[in-house]
Amino acid sequence: MSIQNGYKGIDVNIISYTKHPAKIVWDILKQTWLDLHNVEYDPESELIQSFIKDSLSRRLNPVTMETIKIQMTFKGISRVNLAQLTRHRGWIFNSESQMPQSVNHNVIIPLSIVNSEYYERAVNLIEESQKLYNEMVLGNESKETTNIPYQDARYLLIHGQTADISASFTLPQFINALGMRLENNTHDEINYMFRIALKNLREQVNEDKELDKLDLLIYNTLLNSADVFGATRKVGTCYDAMFGNSMKRFPDADKFVSEATDKCLFNYKKLAWYHELKRIYKEEPELLLPGEKEMIESWEE
Picture: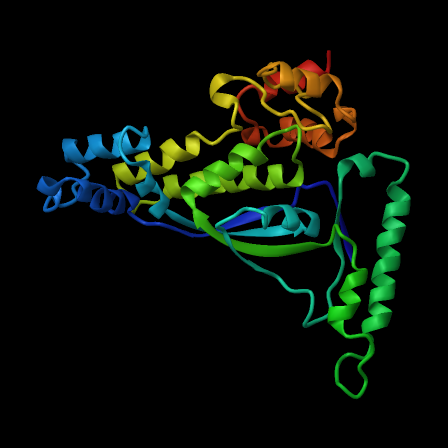
């Protein structure tokens, strides 16, 4: 059994990504024009460069970018996070199973609980859950000594139990998911996980010597655009009833956001993500988005 205080420890492994996306984009994009069908891909071609740039800026067909596929493994995420992640439509998932063998508890405890008077009781609950699980599956080495089957015993595992899950998706699907999940006022563990994913993918792409300059242009243009939906206008668009736009990275987008924030149900400073952001500010500042450093510093006033 092990206990992880907070989300630090989650990681993301980049399995693969589309090599030479620029050639694929060009070969599909050129089909619209009969006189371009025989133009072979050349990253030095000004014509091809201009077409790809126009596709990236959506002046030409942007659907070609959906040919870019990404595969990742999200490592050590909680079952809470897994339930959020698998809501993304069009993604393909394969999750680690708790059924065919005995598992040890590796449980994430959010920092809001770690920093509270409930922490000791939370640890005791995890220990008792592990003890009960161990007793239930004892003897499952053979059918003659079978006790409680693993697929039944797993129902008593803690919801914060970690697992690995692999996923396949398009690059535009990833950017769209980031637009929602990087929102500070509604997401926490999945927010941190996606920040790690974005950083790792960006680093791996830029270290890849096989990619030409147009490949890098496509990846970096799209990855550098990743942010919450209101970021381009520098406004907060979250009107979720729990916290609204309480963290104030950006000013409220409109009266609906302001009203939701004024009437929100909970104090954002009680949220685990509030504590995580303060930790990230000190330990992993490379994960902060534009304006978040100033946002966090404003909390100390």
